[in-house]
Length: 215
Image 1: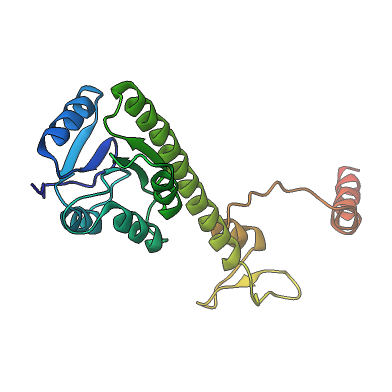
Image 2: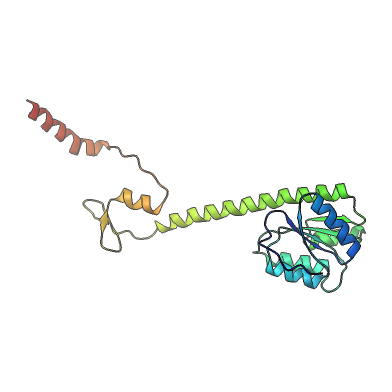
């Protein structure tokens, strides 16, 4: 069975790919009792279709099933590279050491063998969600840093500045103070003061005139 009414699939939705109906019912019952939403596919081709059209954060993936097998799906997901991170738990009856190694090396993040212990599966899923959240937060932080970098880049290049008053000319031929221009094009803030050179050049003469006027 292929469930097609899927939303953005953020939050706590898990895609379960399992071709045995009884096993699927057991897995789904546990996941729902643990507070997860479940979307499922009964073969590899249906699973790949869902993965192409929706953004899942976690997948419980069988190995042996009709159509595309779990190893192929896992490899194709990792080959997409630029897509948002998906945590893959291979849930399969293939329990030989070489099978476990093959599953993990193909791109699975964890490997649970059938028949599974519910407590073990629950713990593995919780660990997976912690990693998913860390990956999500890291991706958001990278976006923020990229935005800051873009702002810095906006200040690069040749700026037309007046050699007397130091105002910067905009594209509209409007001249404005340097501090205002930089504030609008970056996150910089200004605290104004007076340098010693300007103090002697401007402030001291004003003070002298003020003293003379008072006399």
